[in-house]
Image 1 (tube, rainbow, N blue to C red):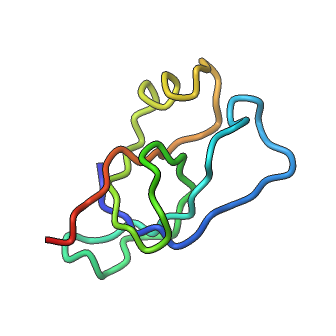
Image 2 (cartoon, helix red, strand yellow):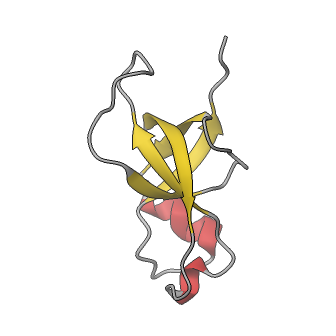
Length: 87
């Protein structure tokens, strides 16, 4: 699990069948200070109705993502699992 900031959304005209109906987010992984970038931006599947600018917890748990997408074969790796409060 890792903190990340939503920096945008992605639109795909053609995508893997397991991603039909999934909302794609561009997320910037963050260090613990919530400001410093930790690596390159990633594509994540939205499961918590996050918006641009929100800080979220992302996970690369493949089992969870396969359950969410109802597919045993998906190319997706990251998904959001929680919104982080500002407090």
